[in-house]
Image (cartoon, rainbow, N blue to C red; front, side, top):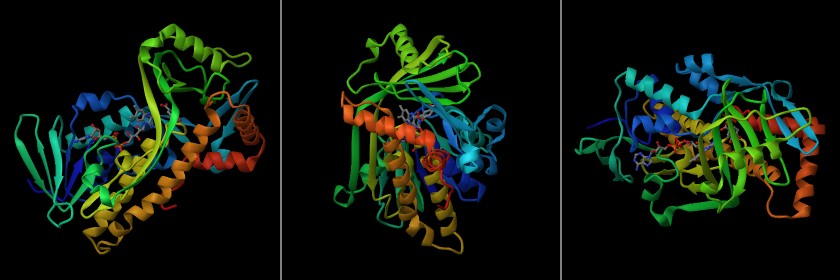
Length: 390
Ligand code: FAD
Ligand code: DHB
């Protein structure tokens, strides 16, 4: 088959890219190796920046987000004895929305299917070819076992951190930067009304804990655990006991409930360049990963997709190849800002062994955030997301 843009991966990056291209009359084909049900149920991020929400709304997929998304005007930072509220609209004029990645994916897939646009699920053997030429192709085996070839102008590698597009760039042309953390997040989804009106990030001598939510009846909670911890060692009772201990605050109680899901995610900061090699462009987790503290991963994937969509649309119009040529440099400004913010939030909130010096630095920084408007403003503008074009 022939299309303008072949997109590998139907995560947030690939789906947003395809949606924006379609709005501008640029054709694309998406290939995804998982099933529709699987990608719509895969539990991941939950916080959308102001810019992500504005983009989903203005591009025509914001109706359910407007009905079901929860606008949040701040967060709580907590350490023993103190729970400090940061008011985002007051600090930086912006907000965030709690609306799960599962819901964003469902809305974008529904829009694509409703318009009868090509999206192949459950493909296998995906490979990219001739990426250094003007005639690149993507080959794959479709769900019925048929070998398929997509001829295109551009390939968008939106296939996440375990995809095939990044590795298709010759190793001699690649450079990576990485930081692995000695801990991960044990995340649970609970049938329990949230016990907090805002997301709660808690520093505790036992390790970081966090209280988020998905709806008025479903809570999402996280615990810092050692990198080698196994899920089978964490009974539901043990999880609730540790959450109750780490989130404890005077005159406040954590509502518990049935656990609907639990998983452990390792934490990593990672950047792989180039984001463009010939006719192959990488977006989202295919090019960079951030630790989840600060909720940047999904938003960064959407920001890349918006930038790449504008560049591809521009390449068919009067601006020619200039935006495509600038894609990596422009994207990297936000990527490294988010790398720093996620690393900083992670380092401030997670305990790493029993280092008394590190612990006092963390508490000094938390107290500074609660007393200095300048410090709080810096957190707020990064958390709610710097505007596109920044
Ligand atoms: P992905 O969402 O990974 O999408 C890539 C898609 O490509 C997938 O659907 C995959 O199936 C598909 N694919 C892969 N290989 C192939 C192939 N060979 N052929 C075809 N398709 C392929 N971020 C936060 O902000 N907060 C969080 O709490 C949070 N939790 C996370 C938990 C986990 C377990 C993980 C893995 C990530 C989490 N993230 C979180 C990060 C966030 O979810 C990602 O940054 C976001 O999903 C990136 O979107 P993407 O489209 O770039 O990649
Ligand atoms: C969620 C995840 C995050 O990484 C974060 O910083 C805030 C909320 C969540 O899954 O709801």
